[in-house]
Image (cartoon, rainbow, N blue to C red):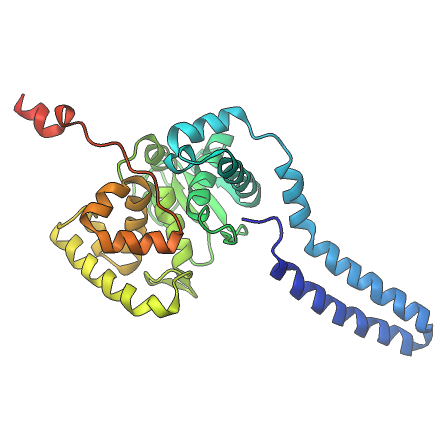
Length: 304
């Protein structure tokens, strides 16, 4: 993420300048005189530029604030991508977390009050997905709605539902607090924050189709073929992707994203082509998870 990309400023400045010119000409021709026309035009242009610079200037102010030590300790303990970074890259990751926490709107339902730790957990997932591409952004006009546990379409209902998370093309990102906390508690390939934010990258218009928006068009056909093959494997239980990945191309992409960042060694060993595609997508190679302890495995315990 960047405080300001040149493209963010170029279009408003050009259109603002054109609007200012037209406003100035209108005032000047209205009899107020050329000086008044120039003044009105410059004032209109300055207002457009000032409006455009609001977010970049705020981001620059936020970037100068010290990152909370408790938040840094949490990232180091729970976010493997962050823990593997050098000091410079960690500072950029922390800055992204700060900007995401400030930019996203957090709301609670069912008695949930979004506190600083919950905000950090969501922002950390977004920062993980964005880290390999500093020019990427997650739309910060979105609302993150946090509910206590599994839910259905009636968010926050006391009755248990089917979903740990849900994202709409233009609406909120809905997350179960229990699932968010569980997702960061262990590297087991289940992380609802990574899953739902992967869907955000996947939306094209009103639906997610499993072809993320950052996919190189030249690779689109090869990616769709790979998705179809991996969905068939997931349906058979052949590999490390859970069966939910077989329900839709969008779910295959989201489940694969969870595995990629949480258990990359397992994904690389069992699904090398999919792993390589995700390395290219995210411009990142996550650190391998710890090797399983044979003495502590389920089967070892069972036979003992």
